[in-house]
Length: 521
Ligand code: XMP
Image (tube, rainbow, N blue to C red):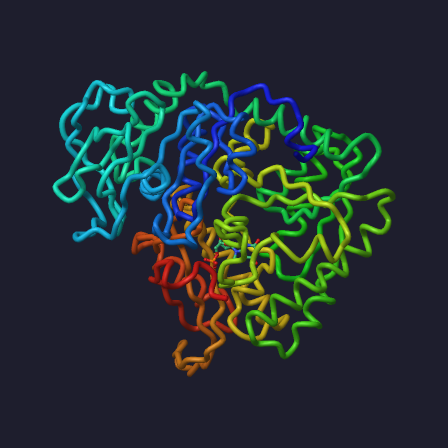
């Protein structure tokens, strides 16, 4: 047990066991939305920690329960009396481990389905009689139940669409109650938490803040200093405020201007932070170092590596001057972590080396302090509000660490940065003028250094393209391009072409993620 988990926990804890499903984090989040604290747990850690849990939910998985290599759990957890709800693979694994049969389904079910609830009076379906619309996503199905289990819902393709043990608090559902496509899914999770597990609903943002402060104090001890790389974004700022609340001036923030920030951003961040918070802050004005190193570099990963390396150098220099600094604080979020881990703790495919996870701390020789490692962005925003951070700030859109460096396709030059800063400022201003930017995850400009022909007055022009990117998303794992009103696009196009020298064409990016990504590099 780490020092962090040894902190006295005042509230109940629910474990979500992550078998590698894309929805595992969503389950945890739904549980927290229902006022119960949820923590992600890896399958191999469950049996050792089962006594800490008030209830456990097993996620789905891309694996088949009957594959030798698939993630498993120690079956002793079924004997412990702690309520368990298996979702999809979670139900199939339970069936497989307890002696039932799971096989490839003749008819796979992906998408909407209707289940027929067989026993409306069970705790799981309390108040949910008859037929329910659900979301299915499975290629395997339960063929026969282990001893002691009965079916409590079925579909034409899945006779065991939901099951329960007759004497133990073990349940399984083949469908996904955590997704919004299962309209009564939250009621089913609520029934499990409050009806089956007798949850107290004792988790709130303020209890998070209190507990996180206690954890930070326990981790850092009485004398260590913490440094925090401030990016000006929501996550690192809220992390800094939280840590300052926990340990006061033993926190020093370092804000590095890498020359790739948005228009006027460095100044705004510094002014805001210094005006509002009495947190020690060092400023590294290092734009030249970064821009010199990027000269002639066009490959996206090479650019990121250069930016990362110089960041480490600059950070090291400044951190040296903070005596006894042993901890590096980061605003890492759960989606950052999950993209670099599999259900077995291994690395998944690297699409972009874009997260705080990995690299930095080892090179710097710090221990990591990551108070938001289990949370989603909107939860961190809620914590920010709880800590008194103004709305306009907590609602800021995410901005990547390498900044405009990943929004200039190809070589980053001082000239390109200046062009993009101007164009991007217009894109943001015009979208914000409309007032419904809050529903957007991100909206920004991208410089496409492809010259195309235009005509201005009677003159021929041969200049760059600006792409407008605006997406809706809940966690950046998937994203949809936003249906911006035509008048907004028209204003952006008109202003960028008229006001920004070096641009004669504006295009709108209509790509979803996947298969594209949000940033262009
Ligand atoms: P992509 O482009 O992979 O981006 O769809 C997903 C989300 O991650 C942000 N992003 C980054 N954030 N450092 C960061 O801190 C990075 O290098 C980085 N690259 C992408 C991106 O803005 C989007 O919100």
